[in-house]
Image (cartoon, rainbow, N blue to C red; front, side, top):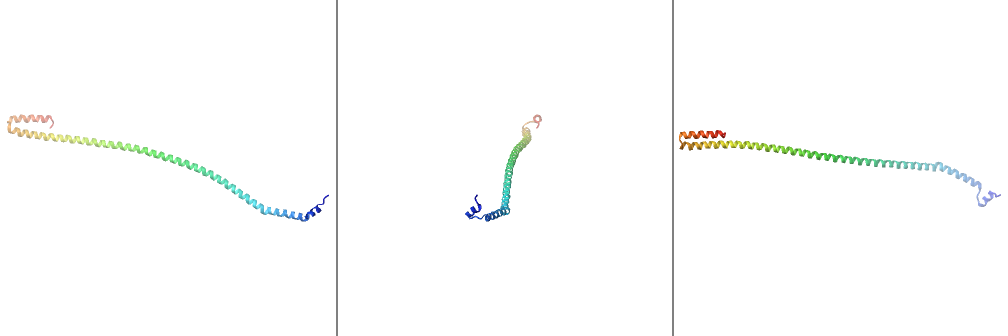
Length: 172
């Protein structure tokens, strides 16, 4: 059988020393894991969880932002539609009001023209009556001056009566 002491001795290894160094290595590894690596790993795990939660939050915020932008775009579209409807309503109302004002203006102008025509007719009739009266007066004066100088009293009376009948029949 092979003697491990002599074999290890040939390579220059002392097994007591190797055992103590191995125990020493295990103790240092345990302490490093317990107080060093474990805390570093915990810190890395904590950071990884924070990063993951931050990414999840960012995704949620991205979804919320997309939803907000979509609802905002819909609101803008609906507001634009309402604005166009209001503009169309205002235009149609303005057209209706303009037509009403035109009709009222036409009625007023027609009334004014009608009143002016009536006034002109009244003035024409009055002027015609005045002219008739003046002509009648002139005819009577001319007839009187002509008749007084050349006719006899009996002829004058007959012409005056005849002239009165004509004037009465013409409503002068």
